Image 1 (cartoon, rainbow, N blue to C red):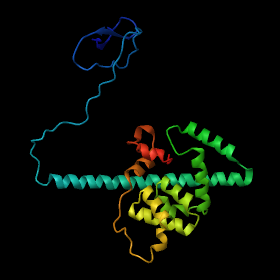
Image 2: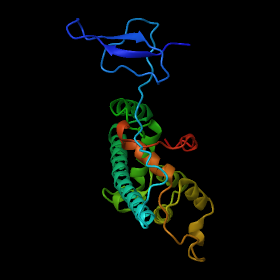
Image 3: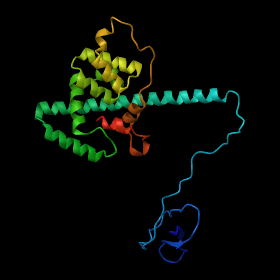
Image 4: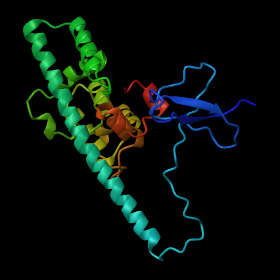
Length: 257
C-alpha cells in the first residue's frame, strides 16, 4: 500500500517556512499542503486539493410550504429570462465589435492593400494579446470583413435583427445568402422564434422565405436560444474565470469556434 502524506508546517524560528512531509497511513483522502514550498524529496507525492462540496444535503423528509414548487419554478424562470437578456446585450456588443474590426480591415485593404498575410499577422497579434478570447482567427477576421461589407452603413447593423443573433448564425447567413432582403428575413425569423443554427440552415435549404406569404407559419411560439448557442456566444468574449460550461464537442466540431 502506498503511504499517503499529510503536510505539516515547520515550527516558527526554524529557518525558512518550508513544509515537510511525514508518512501517515489513513483511510481519509490525502490533503494538499497549501502556501509553502514543495518538498525536494522526489519520492513524495502530493494529492489534489480536496474541495468541500458547495451543496448541502437538506434531506428528503424536510417539510416545505405547499406553494414551494410554484415559487421555485417562478424564480427559475426569472433566472433564465435574466440570463437570456444579459446574453443578448453581451452578444450585441460582441457583434458590433466584429463589425468595427471588419470595417477597419476593409478600409486598410482599400487604402493600403492589406492582403491575407497581413490579416494572418493581425490574427496572431490579437490572439496573443487576448489569449482568453476566442473568435479572432484569420477565418473569423475574414467573416468580419464580409459582415461589414454586407451592412456598410455605420450604426445600421446594430438596428438589424442580425445584431441579436449568435455569431455562428451570422456566419450561416453570410455563407448561404447573397441577397440582403433574404438575410434580413431569416435573421428576423431566427431571432423571433429562437431557431438553432441547424434549424436556420434547414430553413434556408428549404427556401422557407419563398413560401412564407402563401402558407401559415409553422412557428407560433417564441423559443429561447439553443443551449449550445448560448454557451458558445459567452465563450467568445468572457474571461476564463467567468465562463460557464462550454459548447458540446459536436458543436465545436462544426467549425463554429
